[in-house]
Image (cartoon, rainbow, N blue to C red; front, side, top):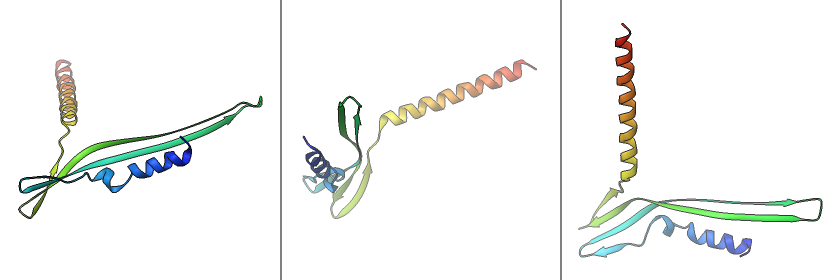
Length: 112
């Protein structure tokens, strides 16, 4: 694949359809999924004095669901996606901070 083909594929991926999914209709409700899309690309070239050279490049993309628009009976509502991993990690951070604080208080009182 050459650079032009790579850029063409990247352009196809990074469109509005990449962030707003196809509407899903069921009964009297339409759900439109929405995602956050991030991408990056890079390339490089090197050459030695012994007539050797090297080239490389790459492209990466990631998509994270952030929620969906729900259309029902003419009303549009936003339903955010819940990332349970962030909730768990946040709870663990709070627990560690609480334990360290309690430990510091107990040590300070025992020195008196």
